[in-house]
Structures are given as C-alpha cells and as structure tokens.
Image (cartoon, rainbow over the protein chains, first blue to last red):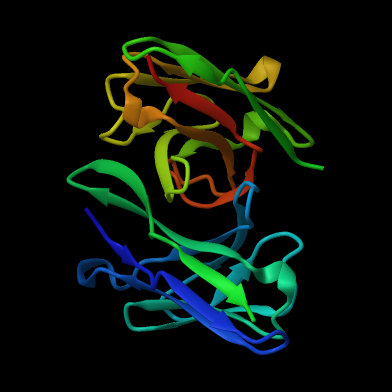
Length: 115
Length: 122
C-alpha cells in the first residue's frame, strides 16, 4: 500500500508562516495529493489539491494565506500570517489503484500549534 | 449551502449490525460521487468506501470489504452504510464526504458531514 509520511507536529508564532510536508512513497512520487484541515472537535475540511508540478487548486472559502507547492515526492501546504484559528490537525490524502484495486490513503497527520 | 448530515450511530454489541444514513442538501446529490470515512477516537482518518453518482461503481477498503455495504437513494438525497459483523476496532466517528471529481474513484473530498459515533462494545 502507498504511504504518505507527515511529521507528527509543527509549530510557529502567531503571524508567522509554516510549511507542512507530505511525502509520497517513491513509486507514487508523481501523484496528486489533497490537503485537509481538522480543527479540534470538528469534522475535516478540504483545503486544496497539489500536483507534482507544484500547481494547486483550493477549496471553497480557503483564504489566500494558504498556498500549495511541490518538490519531488514532497507536497506542501504553506500557511502565512498564521492565526490561532489555524491550530488544527492537517492530513494529506492520495487516491491510488494497485493491482486493479482502487483505494484512498490518508497520511498520519500533522498537529499544528500556534505559539 | 452544501450540507451533509449523518445519523444512525450508537452503541452496538460485537457481531451486531448498524445502518448509517447521510442526508445531503444544498447541491444536486445525484450528480456527485460520495464516500464514507471514519476516525477512531484520537486517531487519524481512514477511507472506507466510495460510490459513483449513479451507484453503479463501488469500492471498499480491505478493512471493511465483505462486512460493510455502501448504497444511495438519489430520490431521497441519501447515502447509506450498512455495517455488519461489527468489531471493537470499528468504533469510530463515521463521516460521509462528497467527492468533487467524477473519476470513478475516490479523489477529492470537498465537503464533510459532522460525523456520527459508532461504539462497538459489550
């Protein structure tokens, strides 16, 4: 099964920027991923799609402070002007087909703390 | 405004069954693919199942294949998950999620419901 690797935690000061990483397994290094945000006690919210060329498409209502990028097998979401409301768990997700079987896998998530 | 509302969760004994419902509003339900995703308390997200807009294409994760059945009723704007042979490890919040793309496979979950808690315990 494909694996999406995410650091367990990240932190930055209020008003600063933070860059979150999602690393795809080598055989899936060109895949598209999606980013999701889950605030404490809430259901997940869609943030954006990031492609291997670094282009990204945001979901409805996602502020301009959120940007996507890519480098090799790494996919990023950068949050600028960090707000307390950005404290959340961030997951990446990837769709795949292996031996004809369709599936979807999420990364283990990164907990973002705003200092 | 897009709205998804799950219901049907609760306490069930190991080996029991439960049927979850997700009622959609604010968009043309019959035009969208749908998914079920769950999250054990304090844990990460796990995709479970996908169904195409017309209900003709269905996919499951290995963890629920053969035990869970996804279905939909477009006339009722409703998505279902029939869960049989439940185990303690099925205890989780269950979310329905709309799929933005029309690729015939789970892709991009752009709207989620608030979730319903399923607890499997004796």
